[in-house]
Image (cartoon, rainbow, N blue to C red):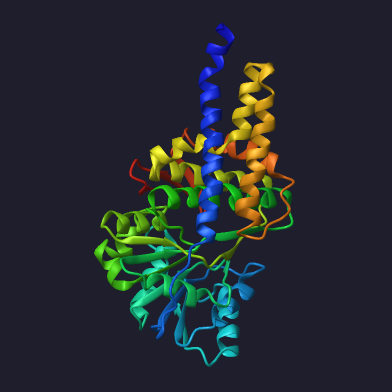
Length: 372
């Protein structure tokens, strides 16, 4: 009796985690049934893409922007300085797709740490159209991405469309492990939030919105104060009673080929910024980790070994409902390793408030803004 009382809190957390997995599976099915009406006369769109450096996939990713099946759009690209290796790639692709209006803008050095938003501020001032799609340089779009997000943004009350992504890691082991975690855990969390409460945040890999909607929340100038500017963009619009939509267009996100140390620094930066951006939600992430909870239960009470079996089955079911059924990812053999790495990172995220980002040591304040 005393032993059961000792592990009762862990069993309660484990039960909650299994319930979460069940909800995530239902949420994934609900997402697969969603759709948006086709727009008879699609409006023109300005695509904004900041560039920085020349990675392995930079050119292929950029070509996917120019190859959109959409009647009228322009592509605006930016770099911080003329000597950036991305300049040569941008000019080569722009010359190849001359029929698509495009421009390369030199944004200059950012006075604040969030250089991406500085670039977007420069680009949006150059944009000819009210509707804008902001997309990162490590993103590859499906050919119908613009058509899909525009149709979704045309729904009544819609202010922003944010795209889920399929993470693709480099050949190193840890990037592939992280990619699997993103494809299961991150997507499952978004789908669950969408199913239970609607989307009250955005992810910045690819976002569609209107200039007017941005102006109502203070514009990109205000958002540059935050590390997670994409999250805040969706949150602020949702707070104003506007609708944030999780798109049916799945994009590909190339997360690089980091070493073990680089990968862990990236994970910890993400964990600490997430904790500062949404404290309650971050604490609640404990329910997304059934395998780690089952291991803790079994360590405290070996007779409860059956929790590990249930946890593995629940995680496998969530993996199929999200990574396989929605993203088309099939190789999930490293899932147990990712589960443990995710749990350790989550625990470490509660400690410390400094991050190393683009060579700068920054302090994240309680409201998610920066201090140098």
